[in-house]
Length: 164
Length: 192
Image (cartoon, rainbow over all chains, first blue to last red):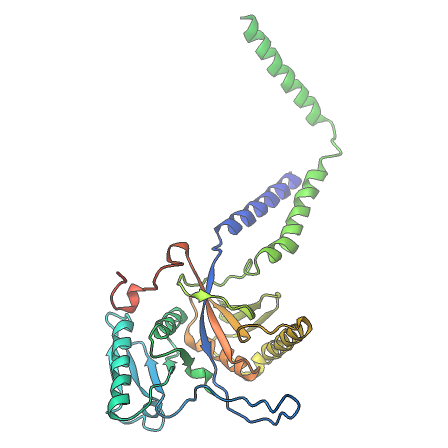
């Protein structure tokens, strides 16, 4: 009887493996993010004086989006760092029934970036800093990052913890 | 009638033969059992891991269409288990620290592992004389139950290990693989 039970368990294990193998999806995707680095010039006499140069830099005017459980807030990095107490340099898009309104955020961000470029002479950058609150679920963060990357204004998204 | 009696006779003969067979010891009986156990060992020890490195990882990914995975990548899953964050790498190493409090010392073994993996990837690329087309990326298969605060120690570990590119893995289901991404919970208008 024990041998029969062991056989049965072995058969079940094989069947479980087979069912698991056939039900696994074959395709996986990724939502890419980056961590910024500090530019450091290193002497390289051996390799034809090769020098690395930064393509995009984070500045005080880099757009930033704060994601909380209640709303999106956006502005530039200054608005959320040195001028955190200021009330005229931040914009809010509230969630509706707890659902983040990503499409209105993208539209308002695009209009804000365009307006800054035209009236305040702030050149548009292709990088955006996302600052989620700690209690935001990771699937929401992932989908917001993917949504922000669909905007033609932003190619790169940096999570706030990635800032060094 | 003769045919019916013949059938019953065949059945009774078969029953008697089976009864006799079961009453005698059969020395070959353990071998099917050993074959089954051997197959389980083979499948769980070699084939399962070779077929798909995600087998055995308990992370439940979100279904979301995203771009395909880059060539060069360090993969690990991240799951909450018993008030702990459990990191399982594709070479079957496990790192664990508390969900609520993750001191820097708790993540140091993970940082050392990441540094070792980066060095191995660089060595492999040098030996192959082939540079990957994309920067070395860490792919994180994060469970849906996790929150952003659980990710912070991971990001700190990546930065400490000198990794600048990472990504969240998603499950691309067949119906959305070639479609446009849209989640009703994120507002906006559905694609037309």
